[in-house]
Length: 429
Image (tube, rainbow, N blue to C red):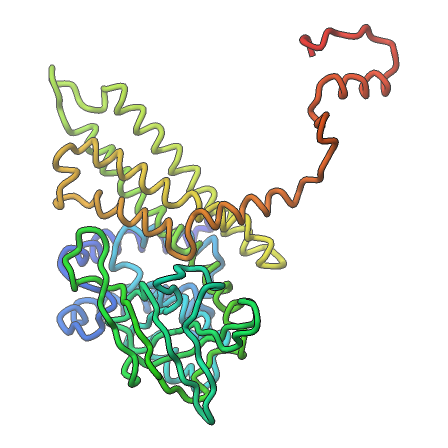
């Protein structure tokens, strides 16, 4: 149960996002573009209100200006923010900056924090996370982007794909192979690379779905003989895999938290359409059995997903070892794209030709569902992770007669309790 003080904060957030922030989604362009002066004039006063309420960058600790909220509180907050494209930026918790700020806070040197973390937390700049590669996707064992030491510098070469917000970023967090003879757990290092460094080239900006060419925010980035000082490395040499996993675990859960809000938005629009639209004989769509089935299925799926997210958040707050939550995070990641896709598709269909048009958000939601099925690792990888984690709790038995074999169980029961009872027929057990 949410404590009364935090419940009051959530009520304020819900009204604030609905009245003050959601309209920005229709008026403004890209939240990551910190050079958009017109947007800044509107957004900064809203950010100041959030700061006054003590809700700015709530995922971070008090030493960094946040509240140090646990994951359960963040889940309840983020499901409200997930209804609006601009809301995370207004609240200082927008990805990928939120994840980048966390690893900078944990692994950055004082100078790195001064140069990168402080302006990032102030909302003055944007950042990007440059990990996946054109030929390898998200599989780090296939990465070829590398950095070699040359005197008092590192020289970075390679290509990265789908680096979100690269075109607006002041710096990039880049994963590169530095120990080519070692496996991924010890062979990669992480670097902080200012985007104006010679040799950093955005080949093109990639959009989603039907976005016009050149207007996308996902950079195809080429690094050609990029020279970096030794202190550009974030964390220890060869430790990038562990840092990345720490970053991605929280990122996956926070994506899911926001997705709860997006699914609820689609569900609300579907229900509104059902009670508003009239068909033959003046009956509402809500009276149709097929409509009722779609709404019932969507409600169940949304509630199941939300409870899974909250349970995972609770596990993260209480687990003695973050690795113990891998199963739940994988489950959330698997469920997320399917729930969003299915509910958005039903809502789209219920709106007819209006639903499939660009005057409603459902097509964008469905594309975003596919993004969620790929971002931070494809669904298939997480299915494998979940299955392996689940199967660790089971031990092999006789391969011929499994533990549920009824004659074997009956024999064991009669041996335990004797011959006091007549033996039932197997089909009656």
